[in-house]
Amino acid sequence: MDTIHIRGARPLRGTIPISGAKNAALPLMTAALLTDEALKLTNVPALTDVRSLSRLLGVLGSRVERVTGPNGDTLTISTPEITSTTAPYEIVSQFRASFWVLGPLVARCGTAKVSLPGGCAIGARPVDLYLKGLEKMGAEIDLVEGYVLASAPNGLKGAIIRSPIVSVGATHTLLMAATLADGETVLENAAREPEICDLANCLIAMGAKISGIGTSTLRIEGVERLHGATHQVIADRIEAGTYAIAAAMTGGDVTLEGASPETFDAALSVLRAAGAGVETGQGHVRIFRNGERLQATNVVTQVFPGFPTDLQAQFMALMTLAEGESEITETIFENRFMHVQELARFGADISLHGDKALVRGVGKLTAAPVMASDLRASAALIIAALAAEGETTINRVYHLDRGFERLETKLGACGAEIWRAKAQ
Ligand code: UD1
Image (cartoon, rainbow, N blue to C red; front, side):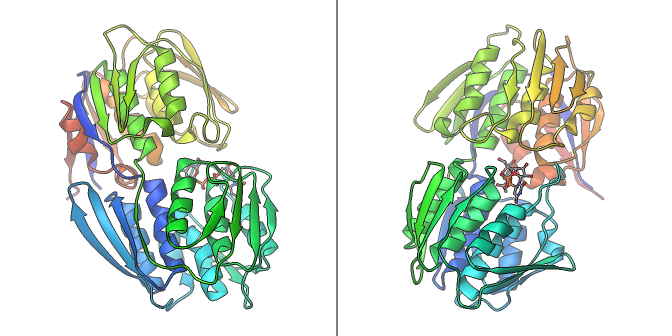
């Protein structure tokens, strides 16, 4: 397996181009299944999850053409016919978003057999809300040998679906399913994440009728069919937030080019509160620190527009060197603290109390061999390593390759000493 090596304790200075958002690209790709015409997606990041989903779409009957460009890849996905409605365990177990083919498959074919998902081990991550929602729309659901069997031979029907908790994946799935249902569907307590808005905007370009975008009530008037469209994937707010934290951590000065500051405003506010300099403009963000130590700052993860759980691990890494004690509360996933014991290997002082981590800032971090446990936790280890004295080795970097495009190149261009050792 590849390893990443970082010789730390040097500031990041320069410009980092922000890629298209993984968490937007994946649902957009599954939306291609809703039409027999071509969906062309631009600004798609080159990541393993995108490649794995392309493979899954191929199994279901799509032709996926990829053209690599200077600003991300262009994927053209055509599915004149769905040739299989089974999404196999081998692929769906690798990343959770592949489960989201469930909605489009039932909507277009009236049947689907989709393996229960895998993905980052950051909690129980059930799919009950997806299944209850589809049942409300008239689908029959069975669970057989680790697969969800969904059947709606006469098509899905519009329904009012109120989710007890906000779920990004359930909202994506039900939103896609509702576009081809008979009548109006209302999704109450829907997720409002920018990636949901991106999907809704693409679906509208494909002919869907959706209102309430950006609010917690989405109204979808089902249509007979959707058509092809061209759509640009939004910028990755988690990648941008991660590099913003890295810049603050190393005391550098970095401009994030192509970032959309309004999509990670909560994170930028917390960085400002901690003492980092933040300047925002149309399509760019500058983060800098003038040599003064950062101050301990508390955060609570929340659904959008709150502080994202996907930046919790990275922010915790930042707080390990801040002055004072910070409390980090994780409200979205119950087991998302696996980075704590790895951060301790750098000399961080963190204790866990249920859903809270108490971080006592230390004077310095020291390099150590560490192990990535999930996608965003890996990013926290990169941030710690960039600030640590000595050479860090990060193992299991395939987690990073799922979510961070050209990580070594982007950080290397800003002065980081970072390289990858290929597995023999
Ligand atoms: C998506 C993101 C992930 C992010 C998360 C929260 C992608 C590919 N992944 O994950 O990066 O961390 O949103 O912003 O976009 N839940 C249930 N039942 C369900 C569904 C969810 O109880 O049927 C719970 C989950 O266990 C979790 C909470 O709801 O505690 C939120 O999860 P959800 O928003 O669904 O996350 P994902 O869509 O899996």
